[in-house]
Length: 314
Image (cartoon, rainbow, N blue to C red):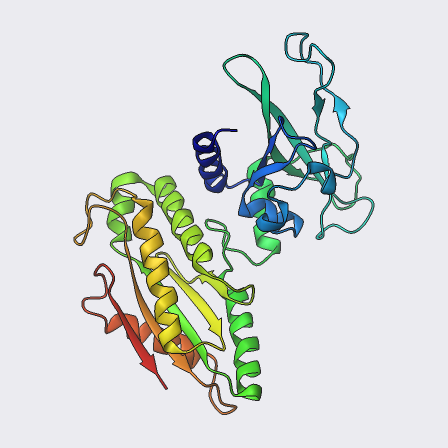
């Protein structure tokens, strides 16, 4: 696919709450050219693992001849991708993930790509292997099971609290510094008042994607705190390095260029942040770190200024 077409397709996949991916029909092996975070959550394979890999590495079934018409398959060489998707999250034979593929053609009616949307198979297998749920039900059920926020796909507050407690104990045992960044979407309620809840959720997904795209280590944790706030947890990280990550997040959000007509700091969506860093102790509780980061945000200018941020260290 052309670079511009791929960028557009990738953006559409990322905004899709359902698990989805795109295969390049013009490459040998139908390689994966784009996939969204919802698919990664459903299967246990990261997006990075799937990109540029042949579909057969992830397919649990053989491809079938695709013959929609002689025009589209004159040489009989086009095959539909296998519809069963392997999953690290589904280990039993009765489990699995079904992918519903649709062909995409160019202006010359030549098959160029396959667009796939996942439908979760029932765990007990009683309703048949090809019985799909709605894509919305798949996404919601998968995220609930994985402890994810339904709107953004990031960890929810309960799952984050468990991760924070785990990292706190590790930090106390090894005396390593632990940092937290609270990220707040500036004037988000005003944005939602103008564009509505659906657009608001789409905006939050873009911000969430900017946050995860700013993290460099697999151990870094990101979660949604509440209506307009997120949190990032960085183990073995100083406040100074956390500030670098926070600015990276703010920069990525600015580059999204999401129009915000009621923001008082810019014409587009921006974020503010508060940073805290502590060396955990056995006597203190893990909530102290998050509370410090919240306090740092509250103390940063007016709490809603572009690029604003403050750091509290213990």
